[in-house]
Image 1: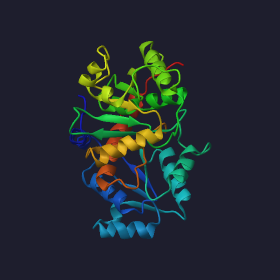
Image 2: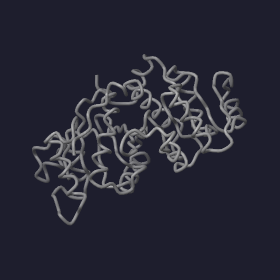
Image 3: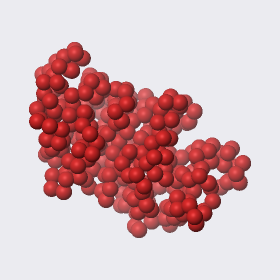
Image 4: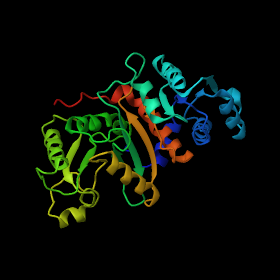
Length: 314
């Protein structure tokens, strides 16, 4: 079964054994509201909340939660909180890592620590999954939060990093549109050159498990009629992508936020490339969006051992 929206995703994960989450600097109302909702719905169990214990307990009480239902670990500062939470991951006591009230650079520093960190892929990368009323299935956008200006090698890793999520959602051969401003290869526009390389590499199985086409402009990628208007008839991706690979973080960030605000899209975000799914939501994200991220992290975590395929040969 291919999961196409968050309602289906919630129904699927509620029917499975709950996972355990460790939250770094958990003293944040929106974060704990999402944790409460996932906990009460049986999606997670025994949440580990690391940070300022006094503040965490106060927020839980304000949310009318019993403190005894949660494992609260006090930490003197944000970095220490990240280290404690990551130790739970490394010890196998938790299967999802979530960012709370901690700066992203400090959070990532702990994840990337060479001795105690949990990075397992060449790079860490973000993907935000959107549900739009105007589109027939989930659409993922990557990378919109971590890598500012990815080169060809980073783009290959970004694509490969995302596969555990697609596999968990039932998308065995995800379609990737590599976005650019135009649909033709222009030697003066490196984005178009990278897109053509990625498409050819997928065609020759140098990047496995994906169908890739590019360069494609956003309108062509998302709408078959626009593609035909521009003379593109034989694309396996145009009008039906699962994922949009953006030229860089700024373009992706702007596109993603426009979908949230003006497209009224539901969304959840995951960071890939670590031992477990990692949640790094925007500070402006609601408790609902954080809950959707938990759903994504949960379905990825339980499928993670099954869904890794050999990465593309470069």
